[in-house]
Structures are given as C-alpha cells and as structure tokens.
Length: 466
Image 1 (cartoon, rainbow, N blue to C red):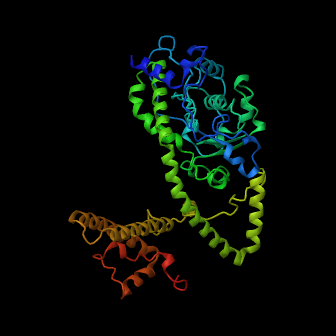
Image 2: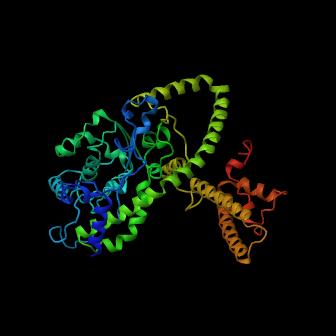
C-alpha cells in the first residue's frame, strides 16, 4: 500500500495526470525533480543563451558528477518478472530491460588495465552494485555487473544524449581511466543513446578529495583548481547523497528488484526536494562567504605577483602568456604541469634502504640497525617531539588531572624510546656523546621533558664538526 501511495504521489507531483495521452505515455526521467540551478534550455535560460559572448559561455555549462556506491547492494531476492517496478525508468533509473539487454551483450569485454594508481573503482568493476541515475544537477551513478566501464558508459550516454548544452564538465573518481578510448567505446553502443561529442566542449575532472590518490600527471591535468568557470566546485556532491541513501541499505538489500528501485526513487526524490527548497538559502550563504574571500585572495595574489616580478619578471610574463594560450586551447602545453623533480623524505628513505641492501660489510656496527635506519627513526622521534610540544601548548592553565596524566605518560614513553635511540647513536656518531655530556646550557638528563630533549641529528651539528 505504501509503495503504491508513493508511486501515485510521484505521478501527481510531476503532473502526469494532466497528460491527454495518459500516465502510460510517461517517458524516461519525466517524473524526476530537476535542479533549478542547472542550465535547462526552455526553462531557466534566456532565449538567446546560445549566442552569448565567449566570456559568458561558461554560464551555460552542465556539471555531471559520476560515482559508484559500493554499499547499496541487493541480495538475490525475487526477479523483475515477479516484482516489476511501478514506474520503470520514469524517475531516477534507466529503463531496466534495455539496460540489462545491453549488459548481457557486453559480458565478453575485457577491463582495461589502469595506467594510474590502483583504484578500488577500477578493481571492483565486476562487482554488483546499485544502479541509479538521478537527473538533477549531478548525475550520481553506480554500476552493476559488467566489464570495461560498460555500466558507467551506458548511464552517461543515457543522460547526455538529449541535452543541447554545448559544454559539459564531467567529474569521476577514475576519470583518467574512464575517458581513455571513451568515444571508441561509444561506437559499440545502441544508436539511440549516442550523441555528437565533436560538437561539445567536454572537460574531465577528478573530485578534489580523490585527486591526491592519483599520480602526479593526473593531479595537474584533472584538477578543478586550474580550470576557468568552475568556481570552487569540488565534484564530491554524490558522496553527500550516498551518506543519506546508505542509511536505507539494510532495508533495500532485502527487497525485490522493482520494490527496491521504487523505494530508492522516492528517497532520491525526497533528497532533491529538500535541496530544491533550500537552494536559495544555501547559495546566499555561500555568496556571503565568497565575496570577502575573493577580495582577500585577490590581494594575496597581487602581493605574490609583485614579489615575483622583482626577480622573475620576464618568466612571470611568459608564464601568463602560456596560461592564456592554454585557456583558449587546452590542447596546448599545460602551464601547471610540474616539470621539476623534488626530493621527498619518502624517496630519500627508499634510496637509503636500497643502499643498505647493497652493503656487504661482514662486521656491521650494529647487528639490527643500519645508519639509514638510525636517521629515519631519529626523524620520526623528532616529529613526535613536535607533536608533543603542540599538545603541551593546548593543555591550558585549567587542565584536569587526567589530561596531565595522559600527557606525562606520553612524554615518558617517548623519553624511553629516545634513550634507546641515543644508545645506538653513540655507536655511529661517537662525537655526539661528548656534545651531549658537555652541554652545560641544556639538561639532557633522563628526568627532563621529552619534548625538549636534544637528539643531535646530523642536521643540528655544524658543518665543521661533521
């Protein structure tokens, strides 16, 4: 009864009862609640929007966020023939039979190997998950069983095939892999879901939270921070919806296929309605934050450019020209590409470990700890000291006895680690022992606070002593 009531309310809210051809003539997505902030020709755009000047065309860009939900799984309960959906493809799901038919024809396709880091979205491509396509400002999708990005391809093409907007900004956790050979894969899809991609300007992004997990080449190529016209978009909107839908996972996993789709349609529609009625207040709040921050950031940028122009004036001018050329044609070299190689602590530790592996000394100074391991552990101890000092500053004048006790215990443990470390240090750096013993201005006795204990790492010893 509740399922039928939700279905009838959905038809009523979307005005399907006023269609002369009847409810049965409802087309795919007609019962979905559209976002009022997204550009929709014929609804919220001016008549001459397609003739806008070049510097205003970014206003008519459609943002599409792709994502997979790995928690909204369904058990093998019932079948579509026994439990069909009351509105098959009318809201936030694609039409089931066409979709499953295409998946069946794509079972023999092989999954492309990742050229980036190992991502779970790539490795889990053959798992079974929820499939939903909310038709609002962000297309939040997730896949079912298939190979070669077949799920995501079908859903993406189903959404954009009838959209007349010439500009698309697409974000996906693994967009660097998904976009490889995308248009070649489109040729294998049914004719009714293809679209002329040559006529559109399509820019791919990786959401900001997921971008650091990619290789360096992806981080400058797919960053939201470097593209004009995207504002402070982060591409993580689907995650917010997943956090709300996942609360229903324990219930929907026991449902039949049709009941589950109808329930999720109702939940997603409720989420969209709440966003619909609160979007004015949300945009106003962000606008009030953005205006002063814009002025502050502009002032900081001007100060930085003034400082750089004093010493690197010509290089700065050249970089600006390269940047403007890249903005007008993104096929040109990206000025944000990092061309210098920096030495990191992790890379240095790796190199020292490789050097230790090549040492063939039959009489090592210490049987278990090499010189590089000593320095690495010393850096870790130094970092722990820094954290301990920060915690001591946060303690405040009115700290409780328990807070003082926990901090003292932490200091005691760290001190014992440093005492053990300094014993081995004396084998590799004997001169440090005389420095520590002869230091009259600093007390390095065991009773001293661990945060102020001098480790005498090589970087603290003057060059002539080393």
